[in-house]
Length: 111
Figure 1: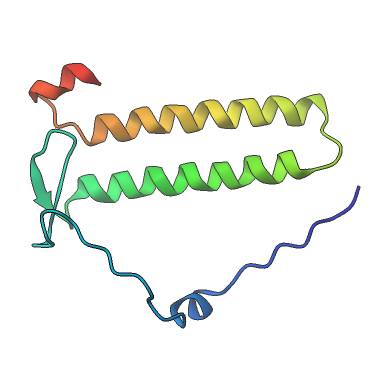
Figure 2: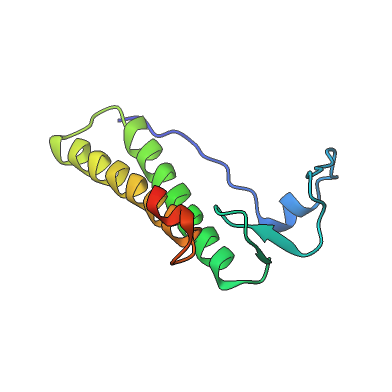
């Protein structure tokens, strides 16, 4: 089995890159962000921390899946693991939808 080299940059290397793109939002940045329902909350709200954590976990699982799939030889247990990780990623999307929809909101029925 051949090994593929992966280069991971340190946070200091990433921070040293000059920003080349500006991002504009329609609502401007007044320290708030919108939930699924349109309700605005402060960016330091626990909801956004939870959403970020689920997104990071999903991204990490995706990286693991990509690594597993890049192996030249995949055993049946590896294939099974990939399927399970992909199911967990889908469930995390559902978790994010539920977290972004406040309890008792009219949009809660959509989730």
